[in-house]
Amino acid sequence: MQRATALALTLLTATCHLAWPAEIVRRLPVAEYVDRMAGGWLGQIAGVARGGPTEFRWHGTIIPEADVPAWNEELVNHAFGQDDLYVEMTFLRTLEVHGFDVSARVAGIDLANSEYGLACANRAARENLRRGIAPPDSGHPHFSRNSDDIDYQIEADYSGLIAPGMPDLVVELGERFGRMMNYGDGLYAGQFIGGMYAEAFFTTDAEQIVRAGLACIPAESQYAEMVRDVLAWHAQEPDEWERTWRLATDKYYHDPDYHRYAGPGIDAKINGAYVLIGLLHGNGDPDRTIEISCRCGLDSDCNPSSAAGVLFTTIGRNGLPSRFKDRLNQEAVFLHTAYSYPALLAVCEKLARQAVLRHGGAIQTDARGQEVFVIPVMEPRVGPVERSWDPGPTAGSVFTARERALIRFRDELSLALEAAAPGWGLSDCGPDMGAPGFLSEFRGRDRVLITHPLDRETGCVLAKTVSLPAGKRSELRLTVGHHEHGDWLLVVRADKKAIREQVVGPQSAVEGWLDVTVDLSAYAGQEVLLELVNQPTGWAWEAAYWERVALATE
Image 1 (cartoon, rainbow, N blue to C red):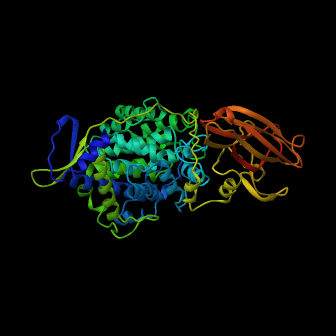
Image 2 (image 1 turned 30 degrees about the horizontal axis):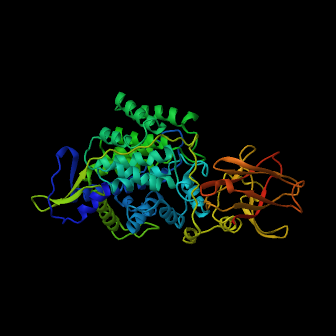
Image 3 (image 1 turned 180 degrees about the vertical axis):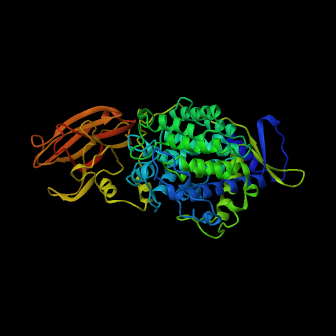
């Protein structure tokens, strides 16, 4: 119904007048939208540029005031090479080219084809994407040890800047783009940030903005708990930001119960707290907001970038002091993008216009002939809580052969995986014995895939969701090998149920190779998730060698 309404409205001219009850819509002059959105990008630029020299140098301690670089007008041009900005612009480009109904799979292909360096959840996701694991599984804890990291929190600013007053769209974009690299609190962090931006077009009240972001995520999540804590601590001592910092750091940085699944990276909750400390205790002052968020430490350029981005959206470009805007190079292009600052504003305005109509709103003209966004008020649709340390099932999502062909950057492992096990994804593989990897020749066989269990309990998994034809016999045919000094347990699972177990070792394999056939007739006419597990037995020489993984139907 919402899309049909939007489609009908696109047929109306931009000068038409429609009437809605005042309580169910918000009106935002398009010129004001552009001004505030432009301010939001300047806030990101100013925050990341000022905090850049301090990044990751202070962990669990407040940065001394003297070590925070003073602002000067030339700093505004120090953000064109910042990953805090150009990664999110990848998502904007996907939306610009493919529209708001772009699938997560297409978005994943675009991220897989990116050429810039990445770390933590972003890097894990891109590696998964390039190996054939499609969204949403590319960010699932089963395939990534970084799913609660800060990555989408840093990159979600775009979602609110193109969705003024549309928190439901912010949540939707998080499901589309944020799930590529994050899950649970890592995903909620970005949806929260985007929700704050969406509200910042309509108020300067920081607490109202924060509560609007809070409405975009499950109340039972630890991230929501963090937001409520910071709101409460700020209310108790609004002039004592260092007290709020100590309380937040003690709970969300030092207590292991609150950073269970951030891998070697930074859990989104603590950096999210540092964004809020600057936004709330900064009292609407641009310099103080940036300084406080920066002095909180850890990823101390991303924090002020997000805090200032939200604050500057409430102010707008025209209301900002000249020192934050006058020296900005209007022709410089952000690294790894096609966007200068003016081009960035143009694409955001274009997408916002599309978003308003898609949302069921309209673009009217007022009595002065000025365009106005008319935006229906809709509550964000928030799903059940997810936790990275106790995740739900994977989706079994892998790229098709046609989709894989669109991914330009393929490492040797992904090519070996495609050769030995076309269409299968790989997860929970440890680094021992050259795994994951491949051998061009091993025991007389070509292009052999090597896997190794992650640890003594966790087997490495090859996974693929397949549709088996009705009325026909289907078989899974494997040729697997073992190291001469060890063995391993092959477990074949269908929809998480073990249907075959076989030790692969000297007693079962002929000249190091074993042919295994698994009858799948019981699943005829069904879609089924197949998993092949390289399960450890005695934790000695337990690499698996995969020469053939094939489905046959007769």
